[in-house]
Length: 294
Image 1 (cartoon, helix red, strand yellow):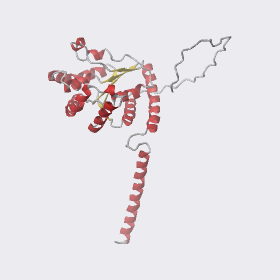
Image 2 (cartoon, rainbow, N blue to C red):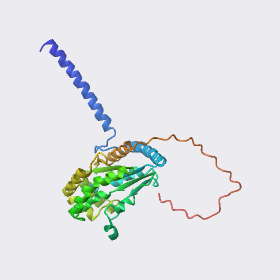
Image 3 (spheres, helix red, strand yellow):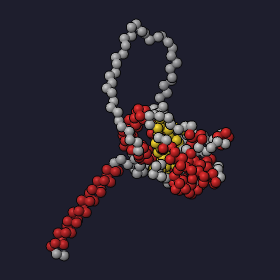
Image 4 (cartoon, one colour):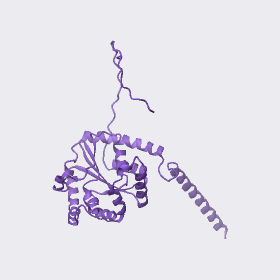
């Protein structure tokens, strides 16, 4: 090996070492926000969520001021984390602006209506954001997989749904669709947790057990739905949801990025002084105080 070759080798080694250091630093920075299971730590999650909550409040005020109308749809397999994500979005905002709709099974009367009819009545007015925890897309998902409707109706729905989405968007409503994607092993773990955790047993239903069994039927139904309704004017935003905390942060950040809201300057607020008692005294009344058990 000549002198030039040795020099080049040392230079390459230096480059490799520098790259390795940078890579190691990146891993360390990433691991600083992850727990032993490789998921986001609670303290990192809480800090980021607090910031995003502030942005959601700013969005709320913008929606109220401009009269904007927004629909956010959440779909995904059972136990994908839809409910927890919706709760993370709505826990710090006004229910008068952010309205959650989780429709029960249709009544006999509703079954005789047009399939979309009961959803239209829950669409937003000006200054409202309506979040659907499952929606009309059930026709191509749960209803199809569980045999609650026939294939002709499903195929008709898949043909018409892009037109309906165009009708919604052209009507001045911002339509945002999220699909939460959980993998097979994680879904099984979450279902098993619902069986043993007393706080979660209410979440488990015979439908969940059947959904667990029909994993690939749901995969086929999802694929057909995406093929029919993933368009430029109403795209599906797909979230990896094995890590619930990461999915919630990513969802809120994406949601905020899709609406051109502007932060309004906050007025200066001075807390007024309390009025003087002017002779008022606390009554000698035997209040029924709650026992302090904790």
